[in-house]
Image 1 (cartoon, chains in turn blue, yellow):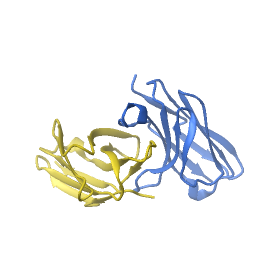
Image 2: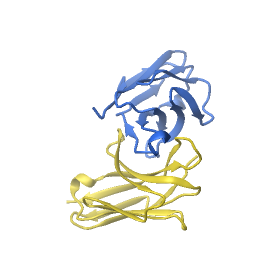
Image 3: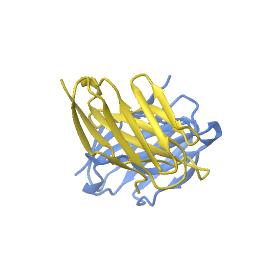
Image 4: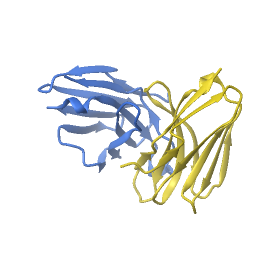
Length: 115
Length: 112
């Protein structure tokens, strides 16, 4: 199984809502990522988890809150978002540095619209 | 922040021709990877080249890496309509973490 599964595929939320994005992988990968991608732009790194610990936070606003409950799951909790946060949110996983920095596997993304 | 700049930003070629995309980056890397993205969905890994390698092949793909110039190129030979997509280079950090940073991307269109 070389899949990274993201749910939901689409999400529309109001600025006062709280929602969560979910990501799951069963490849035994120990590094997991959240990226944000705006239209016609490259993916922009938000967070990296390494061995279930947050290792990189790219100065992301606190209205985005990541969580890694176990080695297979990654969540992104959303609260009080702004319309400019509308984007494609991508989750990825890789074997990480312990295995020599191999390729990342991406999910299909959650297309988020904030109204 | 973006690690890499890619050029061209957009490229249109006839089916059967070769396509070349270039990537430049700024800091020391462990490896450089190329990804393809169709229609703004998930990215698919194409090829990985390590910092101690100079050239790598995979099917119709050829990647080169010049660490002295901090640049890489991706060549797709005998292009097909299905190769129409956005292509991104991504650099893996050499600073003991799993940071993977994407370049600006090239939008490739193959004209049948």
